[in-house]
Length: 292
Image 1 (cartoon, helix red, strand yellow):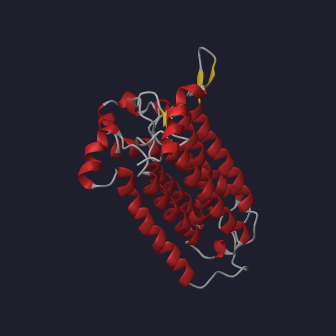
Image 2 (spheres, rainbow, N blue to C red; image 1 turned 180 degrees about the horizontal axis):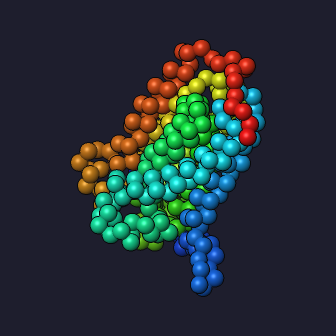
Image 3 (cartoon, rainbow, N blue to C red; image 1 turned 90 degrees about the vertical axis):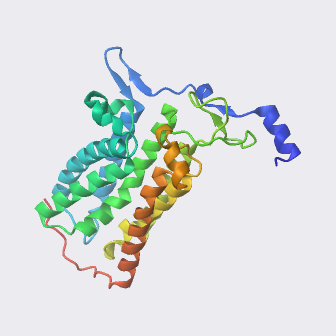
């Protein structure tokens, strides 16, 4: 039960309104051409990730050379777009497969992290196989740069006023009313995800890479990423409203689709992190690919 002071504060101030922020999904409108924040978020994540990776591979013992990084980001970008969209259609909106025009309408939103993850893993597999690289060590390096993309993506969800949270009480200072979600105040779960999956997880991985010798333990960074993302997503799903078409699924199973998809990531993360910690660490003199 709310305290009297909290109830009085809620009655006085009320919830925040997303509409009062005057946000728009469109970043630039030239009349004949529009650029949306959703597209810019993906672009920002890819550019920042490439910049960070280019700095990381300058350190001793990097598992890939600049030419490999160029190829990897080209194929990873395709994997993010194709895998993310197909994953969304598979897990959240199977009806999109019946309407090809809607399936390819990326600008309307609707991307799955788990589908994008599969696409990126396929890109890493191909580049590693073609270049004779260590798949696991390349994954370690990519894991460090992924949270920046997640951060921008979740901010774009908030700017779009989509993927809002569950109904909460108005005494929470940041409770917000979103257009299309009814009059009740809700958790701005997009910002929770941006904070946990982007800032917190990204900081942990960056510190492990730059301030420790974690990169010399194959699988440790990718294990921390999978474990951290899985736990963050599982937690935030308690505050995030399930997709309308999956509300019955969440009610029947007790967990949302996002939580079910996060459980395997937690298991994978524990396996690779534990495996990396009990195995001998690579020496600083381990060979690196020839620069190109």
